[in-house]
Image (tube, rainbow over all chains, first blue to last red; front, side, top):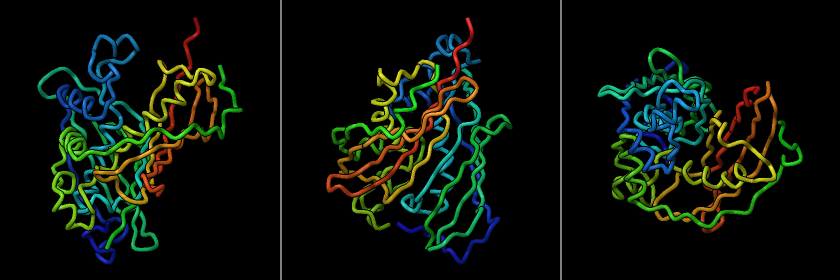
Length: 142
Length: 150
């Protein structure tokens, strides 16, 4: 349960490889099924508008799941993630077309902690707007 | 309407065990488009030191949120679920969730606040395996948006 990245090889400011994650209506239906979250705001436009949203939005937990991939891909062992938290600051609107939306995630080492752990600070945006705030993971490095 | 502060600290009974299956983990990993072999290939997971395939970090939310339903749907608390949005989410792991785990969740209301007419409830879900060992703790902040004035 230790990352392949060594603690000695990183410093505050070390950037992790950034990633972009496309999300379409089909993605949301698949995520609804896999996660068991069938809230219609994630697949039913009419319902979403009735509750005051501009359109169907992605599950916050879907965005949270995508964002941590930047960390798990970097670490090699997903079990090296010992803490992960986010604030959902803005919704990811997913239009009903063949493009959908794009979630762009970047991350850097924000602090060196004890026991060869580091805090990674994540930034997730969609349409140039931040969709996650206070997005941080603690990772056990080797 | 502000929620009853006396619910702070209330702990709900542990849920029946949820058995984590390999194929459920695979289904979740595919849904988030993550091809990490540790989620689908037991050999790859073992090479990393895990006894079976492990689940992606946020997988356990499906289990803890279902457990939080006891709080959300508690008629005595009276949270208006139709106005609830997910505010914050945090996980602290003792170890990753893995296939074969039989997990129970114990939910506790950590805090209740009222802010500008919004009701804010913090729920902690302690997840344990069959042997009683702590696996992960999930903190979920739910915000019930203020109802518009009629």
